[in-house]
Image 1 (tube, rainbow, N blue to C red):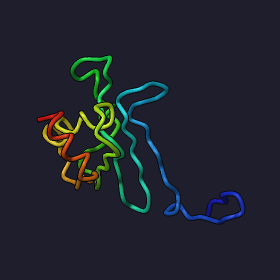
Image 2: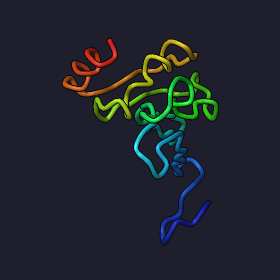
Image 3: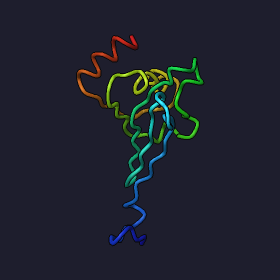
Image 4: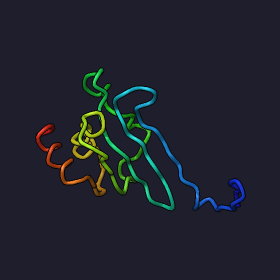
Length: 111
């Protein structure tokens, strides 16, 4: 067991957060959360200051097949514009969730 404050926790109770972009700047928002055997990707954006692959999150730090769920917080390009790359050019097979308004705007922006 690990002691977190006054609470005792097993390894299964520890959440791992891995930033894959957006460190100290706007753009490329993407974070990987792992908790109790589930892997969640939070956002999948691009960096507006870079072109092509250089603008993508650091996907080389993650196995896309291990991502169970991709959650998109909102439709801004720095939070969602890497979706086509991640879903079509990697082995990601998980589910994607976003609000209905975000889905409507994403279709217009990325379509």
